[in-house]
Length: 123
Image 1 (tube, rainbow, N blue to C red):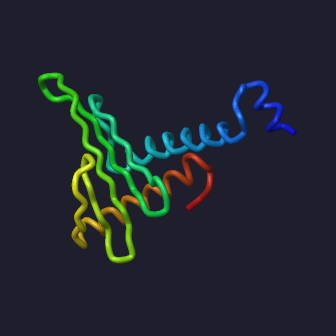
Image 2: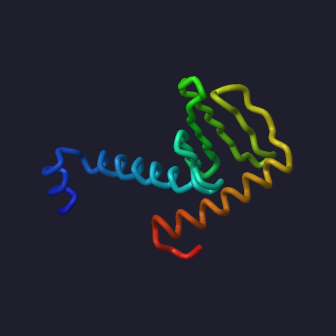
């Protein structure tokens, strides 16, 4: 009943409300995740998040000295045989054991911080 009332008030279907809520959670998780690697300089935007059970995204934007904006998006796809990585929609390649350990550590810290800061749950 409450969902129907909300849909009437907002003009959105319950499905659209769920989609919008999920997107907002991902954005908030990405912002928290971007801080996993330390303070973010003023001229940068950094995001790190779990897109789904097998996909991690690292995105960063910054300004060059000449004012030109740059960005890099790194996608990690976790597979049973290893972790594949692609940057800026380039070709996938397997990552090294060292990079996999670094990703695992970052994912662990991300999970702890997101659970604590966003969902109020101790990890």
